[in-house]
Length: 324
Image 1 (cartoon, one colour):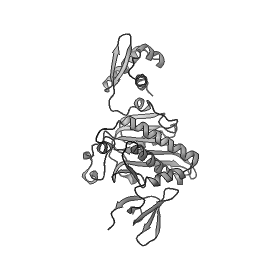
Image 2 (image 1 turned 30 degrees about the vertical axis):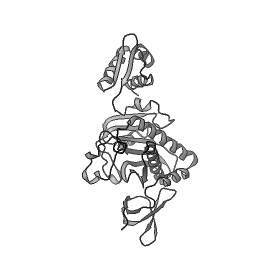
Image 3 (image 1 turned 120 degrees about the vertical axis):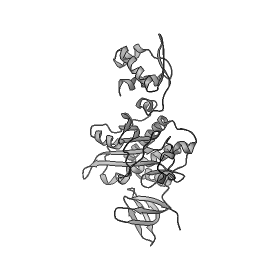
Image 4 (image 1 turned 135 degrees about the horizontal axis):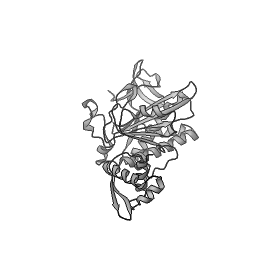
């Protein structure tokens, strides 16, 4: 964390009680002039910081920014989010995470207010306007590459359970979306670098339409998307949501490492919005129509086709259809 973030963190942890510039300078091994410089910068970013002679500085208000210090205040994790790289705007949090993955600690998070080149599956563009939550988590699991798809399902489960915690009915659409009332509110993109028998790292990108104005979306996807703000009728505290998401993700990830995938898969199936639906699956080789009847232990979707055959889909685009 930067000195500025550390100062902000200390002001947050003091919960409005003044802390002296002398104490801040001593604890952070900087001059009081440096403390004052960073206080001015924080004020310029929209933080409301009072200063009182002989008492010090106190935080009385904060802007709606996904600042690391705000996220870490009260974050209860051991691995996920201990290191957070924040950007006002970035091309893609997944791209940045991949750039630093080899040297970064497992659980490092890259987060941004907006993305100029956000990515979806199969190279699709992912719109990432202000008000959303766009983050990537660096993982270094000791699993074989063929099991990497399990991390996408794990992330979907964590996101859906976090949204459920806000009294919003969320369902998971195979393989990488979270839906509310049939509309997309969250997308997941997992990328990795691996050898034949081991994963060097995985990057799990999670994009959530938190306080996004869905009217900003192109017309062709506007009716297919929603936001947490739209569903709740009021804005979401994004820092609170990120903390809950990272905590839920770590809980599922540690369970996965300790006990395997079976319990996570059972929960995923219970929250699935795809199982039981009539779907259209598009792969690189073909298009399949049928009923989604299950998901196997590796996250493969099982389809009963129109002619009664069972097809297993490892990767593809899934579209929920109405039966005719």
